[in-house]
Each structure stands twice: as C-alpha cells, then as structure tokens.
Length: 364
Image (cartoon, rainbow, N blue to C red):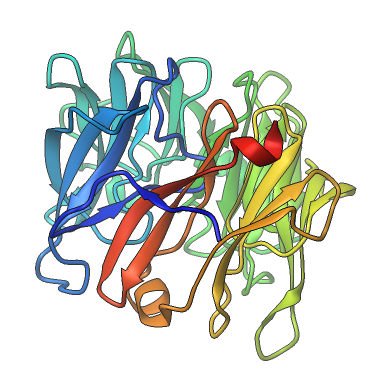
C-alpha cells in the first residue's frame, strides 16, 4: 500500500473539491484545501479555506470561512497563482467567491449561482437558474437564466448560453425538458474556452441524466442521453467519463470503464478500468478512478492509458457511512505535474483527511 500524506493533520477534518478541480496553484507552489471541525453535524457547517506550501506542506494560512456541506466541500481551486474560487452558502443559498490569496481580499462575490469545476483561459463559468434570479443585487447583469463566464482579472461577466437555447437543444434531440432542465450542473469550458458542456435533467433519463454541449462560435449543439458520469474534457473536442450500467436494481461496478467520448457520445477509446469519479494526467497518459459504489470497499485505481487492469491500487478503505451518509466522495485528482494523486480519505466514520499519494515511481 502506498503512503497517504495528509495535507494537514489536527482535531478537524480536511476536504478537497471536485474531481478535475485543481488544488495546486499553476506555479506548483501552493495548495488550497478546507478544514471543518465536524463533518457529522448538519447544524455545524462552518468550513475554513486554507492554503499552504505544496512541497513541504508548511506555512498554513486561513484565508476565509464559509458555511458548506461535505459533498465536494467548498470546491476550492486555484484560478491563477494569486486567486482562488470556492463555494459556500449564505442563508441556504449557494454562492461562490473569488479571493486574492496575496491580499486576503474578495475580488468578486458573493455571487448566488451554481459553481463549476475550474477556470479555462482566464474565464470561470457558472450557471444561473430560476432560484438564483433576483439574488444578485450587486450583479444586475445576472437577470436571466443561462450560463455565464466571469473574467476574474477584469471582473467582467458575459452570458454565453441562454436557458432557451438549452431547452431548444433538448427538444431538437427528441427529449422532454422538465422543471430542472435549466438548473444545470457540472458546467465546464473546454481548454480553449470555445465550447461549454453541462449536465442536464430530462424526463427520459432518470438515472444518469443527459450531457449537453454548445460550440460557442457556431452555436452547434451536442446531446448525449443517459450520459457517462463524472465527465471532464479530455481535449477541445472530446470527453473522458465513466461508462456505467444500471441492471434495474443498482449500478454495476464491475462493468464500469473509463472511456473517451466524442461530443455526440461515440466511444473513441477505452482509457481505464473500473472507476466512478475520475481524472487524467495533463499528458493524458495516466488515469485515476475510484470504486465509489455503495457496499464496495473504496479503492483508488491508477491506470496506464488503455489498460483496464490498474497499474497500482493507491488506497483501500471501507468507511461506508462517511462516504455515503456524510457524502465524503474520494474525487481523485492529478497534480499539475502528474506526480501526485490528491483525494479525500476518511480515517474513521466521522473524520476525513485531504491526502495525496506520490506516484512518481510509477509514472516516471
């Protein structure tokens, strides 16, 4: 078994965000993570945002605090070397902030919206649905439903997709929108910020939902019903995601595979074996997935591209209550240099740690 290195250890839990989010700063000098006193008390959701030095895990500094649940934590990620974005809630309303870690000042937010995984090309995408309307008096341009981008350096906000375009895309694909269709989640820009994807709720896809994408210059739409899960952009024109099969009673872990898909859902290639939450190294030679399926031990699998047998099992535990009742999902993520895997790792049923494993001996 590989050594698990906690980012911080104390009488508190620590959390990382979504798979594919990036806890490291672009220059590789710092890590952002969260601390929480209690993860098993729904009345105490105070979550602290901390940064520290990456290499020796020193110089820990608290930069903000917010109310936040356990699932994906505050989804804190670096935007550039000086700015982080994170989510939380104010009066039960989901919000995100952008903070300058050098000055300790909020440069944007709170914005009441559904956050995304990360920024691309200096733009951070987010979505506004009906429940966020009239909740952003300081941002009057957020006055209709759709997908927006925020240029965090200039503070400018642009609407890139209107909600009606989403509805039209679903209908043109032959599916039925519902009251949740415009409550989009997992909004992500491709690396060049020329296309945007989003997870959609439609009547016919009750288990996995649907995946939509829009090419921003041409307005060409793409739609995948009963989509693969925990999708991330592989490159500008394709996704990496986990294929899952539901047998009528449960999702089958043994048949899950990490695959690469076109925007329209065709399988391009198999990337790895069993997975759920996934990520790929920046050179796309290595992939990581977890066995987050209820009732099964929680493994972190590292795959060389195209292999369904793992090159390494980085960790195993069986804290089912922490993972499923308290919603501490592993969310494995590669470091920027591809030499580490970060993930959430319960050490008991009511305490968890943000850890990493050094994989430099495997991927060298």
